[in-house]
Amino acid sequence: MILWQYLTLLLSITVQICKAQRCEEFTDLDLSHSIIGTNLKIKLLLYTRDNVTCGTLVSHTNLSTHPQLNLSRPTTFVIHGYRPTGSPPAWVHELTELLLAREDINVIVVDWNHGAANANYFKAVESTHKAADNLTAFIKIMQEHGASLSSIYMIGVSLGAHISGFVGANLNGSIGRITALDPAGPQFTGTPPEDRLDSTDAQFVDVLHTDIDFLGFREPLGHIDFYANGGTDQPGCPKTIFSGGSYFKCDHQRSVLLYFDSVNRKCTSEAFPCSSYKEFLDGNCLNCDRFGAAGCPVFGYGVTEWRDVLLRLGQTKTYFTTNTVSPFCRTNYRVEVMIWNKDVRWGYITVKLHGNDKEAVATIDHKASEFKKYTEVKLLAQFDKDLQSVKKVSIKFSTGNVCKTKYKFRVLRIRLTHLERKERPLCRYDVLLEDNKEVTFRPLLCEESNF
Ligand SMILES: *[C@@H]1O[C@H](CO)[C@@H](O)[C@H](O)[C@H]1NC(C)=O
Ligand SMILES: *[C@@H]1O[C@H](CO)[C@@H](O)[C@H](O)[C@H]1NC(C)=O
Ligand SMILES: *[C@@H]1O[C@H](CO)[C@@H](O)[C@H](O)[C@H]1NC(C)=O
Ligand SMILES: *[C@@H]1O[C@H](CO)[C@@H](O)[C@H](O)[C@H]1NC(C)=O
Ligand SMILES: *[C@@H]1O[C@H](CO)[C@@H](O)[C@H](O)[C@H]1NC(C)=O
Image (cartoon, rainbow, N blue to C red; front, side):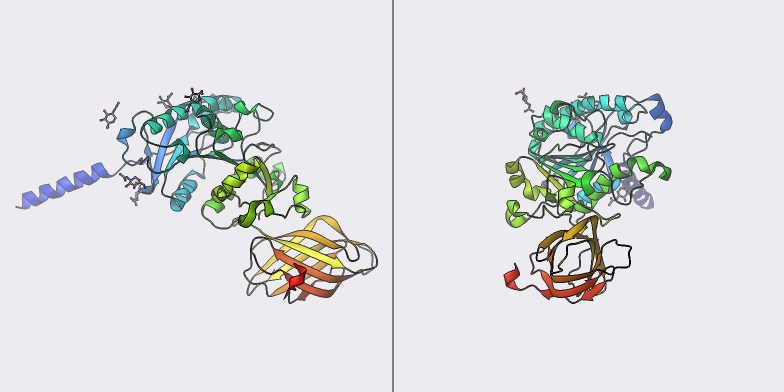
């Protein structure tokens, strides 16, 4: 009897050991591999909701061995970029977990570290076409097993964005979506569409630019292109080389962090179509009428909500700004100021919103604005956070004048309009400001006639 129980126990332990899956990890190489140079090898790591932290190595040819890969579900490929040191990308696990928390899908991490890890960037670039052909063959097998191309989504970072594009082109643009996170510029800038990502590579292509003056791609590549903070320098990233290695990659890597905030719905960054970043900062592009009731597109995972209108528009270039750390999103208000001073006044405005226990600040200082009698000046104010209810408003006007003359600034009306929430604008009439002195007041709901 005891022996029998013992045997049963032993059997159940054995079964459990066999069931306990081995987790496959992303290839970890080091600098010496990169210096010698690596040849392309591709590992496909599958993650599902069964276990979001444990990757399964997927066969390139025989999908019947993987019951976890349920092809009735959509499949999202995550494709990294150049790996100069050979280390695994730090963001892969977090992205996988966030994607699976958001939707019940198959996430396939494409590990091409052998190939991407090469001190010679040009060799890594050469591998992108081969990597794409390899992935194309795999997707065709998925198709044979019942996957539909329109349920395939590729998220490509840097060089990975162009790999996604090549795969999409191989499949005649019929995969559902490509998201390019700061697509690589060097060796791709100025090339014809077949040698880089372009909007014909998938049914819908959305692109984020964060480092157009160095590692990223300057020109628009998709149906919608988002230029975060103008696409050049990201706030909080080092501005000089003396800050060490992060100087080279901080702007570029920010693209992934901005995307995280959209996948986990931490906050929303509304993006405004505009011809240039300067025009956007000047407040000349705050009209979202062409998007109807949905308003301007929100950057990131959920931009598919605007897909139909964006496809109709062909190509849309948009801008938004961010904070220095997550939550990166900022809150946009249109600020309209009308003065009745006799003389023209030039100056900068700082606006503070006070909520119940929080305060949000926007300084409109990219250039001095010109204020003229009875002329309404329209400004874009970007606050570091969103306050649900604004109790008080402070404004400060500064001319930058160092002389002793204390300029007075007679405001006939100031109006603040939240650009995302459909609510009555906040107004204040007849305020007297003094150069560099903050004035705080309770805002009123604007009169209807002011709309
Ligand atoms: C793709 O790459 C893997 C590993 O690098 C290899 O085993 C497989 O045969 C390749 N597939 C094709 C179609 O070349
Ligand atoms: C997922 O896999 C890891 C590693 O094998 C394991 O430690 C963990 O318990 C698993 N989680 C679940 C929910 O099965
Ligand atoms: C694919 O894998 C299944 C299950 O492991 C096996 O039965 C089958 O023979 C394999 N097919 C090929 C073509 O290798
Ligand atoms: C595969 O996914 C579909 C859709 O989520 C689901 O209805 C089906 O039960 C799944 N099949 C298996 C074998 O888990
Ligand atoms: C793409 O188009 C070419 C040429 O028309 C065709 O040969 C090929 O089969 C198509 N591929 C797919 C995946 O539809």
